Image 1 (cartoon, rainbow, N blue to C red):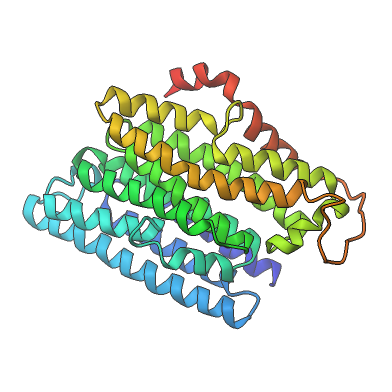
Image 2 (image 1 turned 180 degrees about the horizontal axis):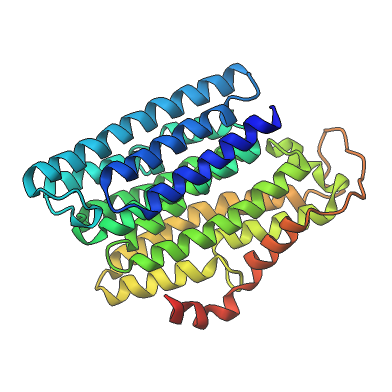
Length: 346
């Protein structure tokens, strides 16, 4: 892709995100979401492969539908209350429509079907943008409207997302699809705590984005697209395989890594809110996710001789590791000791 064109699209992404997260008026927030959608489409379809074109088409249709619902929800609210302010979404029907619209934008169950397919058809770096940067504006809208949302609906969506994200990730062999189902599962954790402690949702999102960025950048450096390629990648870059192992275990939420921190705080807060059954269910369902992270980690690092695979081994490379991978990995595995400080900040 032409560097000037790429610069325009990336700048538009930043612009759209900034407009949405800094706006008070629903129409401005909607404008930012639309700019974001139009800017990411060329980045999804830049390879001109039929699967990439299909992914871009699916993404456009889903996001256009969700944006229409956002506009419809805000107009209904303005019709009944005379308020266009995002924080004044008080009409119950409007808040239900908005929850459906944002769930569609994020890929929460039951509006998740598009996300794995779109991620599978996109390049790895675009997949990283779709999993992190593109989720930020809708999450900020949920954050701003959290007092007027329906707790039962969000808790149901959250538990279903963690269940299906874990369940459907078990059988996958493509790394991008596995990361898509991992994203759906993490969104469930963010949605369940949104009404009770919105800042914890944002903390969870920041940590998730950091760990996912580390995994995607490592997979991009290793040029790994599926599990069979991952099994032979250790001969090419043993250090990157070790980094992948640690970041995957952190994403799974195992102590003493960073990924344990948001899960710990969310379970603690749910228990304080007399939602111990929901906390128990969501914790047990996250074991499904743990299984496929361990499967990825096993393929990356433990398939050493004599447990060889029937694939060509790759040449060992001494190429230096990208500094951003090193920084993100360090943050992904070492932030747990400063959790008291993070808890006081939020």
